[in-house]
Image (cartoon, rainbow, N blue to C red; front, top):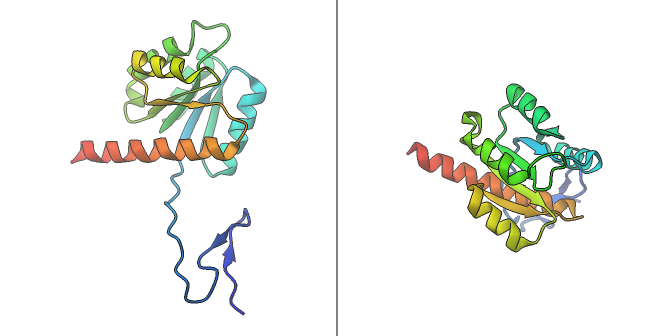
Length: 161
């Protein structure tokens, strides 16, 4: 009897019955991602989620660690906590990151539990690519990151033409 292959997470790949048409899923984009988060517990959790999903994830808890990471890697996406302790705020850091030549093709995304209206204003004020509201659902974070990576890939491709 024919059985569909299962991925590592147990999801079926392919049609469930012989002759059935498989639903085409979007191709997964794997990326180098820098997470700037001052809560070590949250940082470790996000790093684990992203690495388990196949991403090359790196973390920084402060501006010095962020600068050191940027000397080693060239991320395609930066996930930036808005409320960083000991700093003037994520919006100031976002403006600094936007000026970094290594990040011109990267998506810079706020990651916060702040109100969406506040995040929308910060996005407009700083010129970052968007925001993701913090959630306890890892699948939501991964879905949103995939969305931003796909959008940036399309935008970067359009600039080449």
